[in-house]
Length: 310
Length: 258
Image (cartoon, rainbow over all chains, first blue to last red; front, side, top):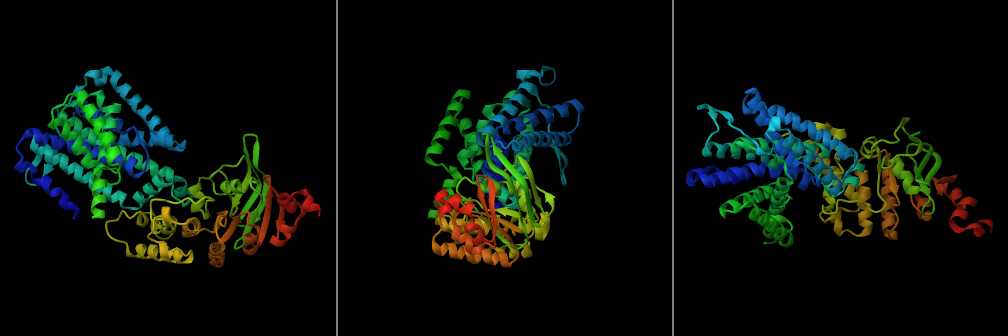
């Protein structure tokens, strides 16, 4: 049943010819991966990680730099990037969870690590080109049966490529969240002390949640860098983290569909009504405040509630 | 001995909550620990359950030292604790609460891979085991009628029973109960006693702390009295309750002399 949800997305490029609109879809797909993955640690496990944009940005840089330095493919570069993301997630997660940092303490410490990463990238001029950022000229290729090795270049191929990445992310997340792992995440979110006395290794599950979220964010970051062809330190900024949090809150944090809906609205709206950076920030803020006041469960949460009531 | 406590001490700053406490619990018995408020009962259970680390002393579980072990590892080893103020997953239904508590049971029966449900096909044996276990425990704790109600909508007595039900679900060898009878009505206490005896008959060792002296006197095989963090009397419940130092601790010096 749920697979049917994706069918309209498969035929959209056949109906919509506008590159502009398709590129909004592509941005939405990629940012939806970031939002869905953030919701693993935030909505499902109940830990407000501020490291998400950092994982997204570090991976964007790392994959691009590895590709340009070593002249390898996108996929080859993605492997060490993911390995590095897993490693730093385990390191930072272990520090936070060993010291039992909860709620705001966890948010502040992960924010500190995130700023640390941003400052390193900002100031390591010889490698990252500082504030100016770097161009990413390579494009990923995929092997398609019948067509052979296909370069992902142009709006159509990027549309399907990023859509496939989102579908795989959602499938993986729903597998994990509907399993005992997801149940343990929920137990931690709802009552961590009780979860522990019931024999659930909360340290390990929180670490798993944090690592999985960051690894998927790393994939989103790498895709984002290669789609836009450009990387800059702002990818790691607190604003980027706040954008992702807004998407999750707008869509609703209790489902996988929520963050996807949030990503679509907040990516689509500013593009549809041509806005400057400042105006965009104001719109984000307004949408966030109104959502929290009117629909604390988010778009999807409210819709589900209405359907149950009917 | 199943559990041995040797010269256990816990200090919070200058305050000794538990000082130099030693006792042991044999397999299959019901031990009642009582004492006035502030006598260190809850701290003692938290030390055994791994929620607090002791300042000094040893805790031997089946002859292995477990002090300072994390709570989930202690629980996995067979020592499970309930909370004085019921700790529940308030947003979830009674049934879902108990379902989360099946974690250790499923891990023991089916191993990690089958418990985690990551396999793409349905595991009928695991699902049946889980459903049966939930039904049994809910019936025993008289919660079957409210199984689909949210935990937040339960009465205080039902909340307490749900706490016990979740602990039972973990199949503990030693169940530590922190004031299970406080705040319960007479009927509910009888249900509780019934459930506890059933548990003991099934081979579970129980350690109950409470200040309801008559309740402990009915269910416990052996009693230990604590005052200001130290053991002041130990033995058959009736004897311990008549012990002069216990009477003094509870009723004051004048009654002890009388």
